[in-house]
Image 1: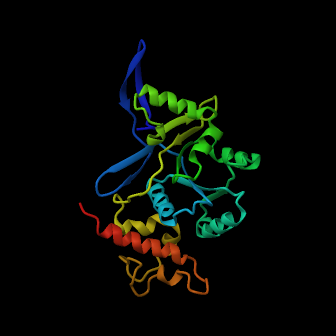
Image 2: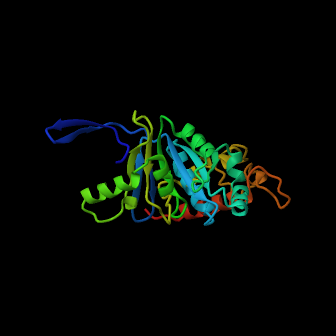
Image 3: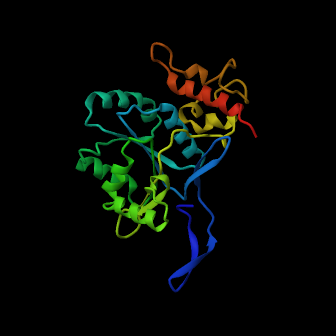
Length: 265
């Protein structure tokens, strides 16, 4: 798996992996059919979304839950800050995530602003970071900005593997710095992000805004969906906007709980 630490025994122009060392974590998604592993031993998952096309809050929430389950620090980066009105709408949509103390970083990769670059490098320095996001969010642009010549490298890797395909279909590790202390992992885009490895009753604890109030319930086994005396329900934002948990986040929680309750083993 990309990111694994191994003991390697060299022999002339080849070598063998003698041992795979224990992992700190493994970031993956799982649906009813298969499990897709992205990378191991991560410090960060950088979720790159864009002001346009409009991002899916549901997919964002799923990726954040998967990171939380493996105790990996997420960073949300919103690209295309140069598109003023779409960016303002998207930034407002991310308000619940800023309140949860997730790092939410504005970016304009097209403009390649020095301030954006410096802020991003400060977060990534000395860390191993997986870049995740839907097609069109700017992942390839980001990778080529941070790793000059990355597109050439991917073509060379593709030819070496005799696949005849661009390696956006695979996960690739790049060193950002010459000292090889900062790793960037590029991943393919995805349309779905299954969470079948998460039990329904785990879900509240993996959503920080829900978890903050999940222990204030009358019943110890509260699902936070219909029970009287539920601390979560009491804090869902009402029509006048008051409440610590946004209505959209609570709706996502309810939909995911129902989905995970119906999963087949």
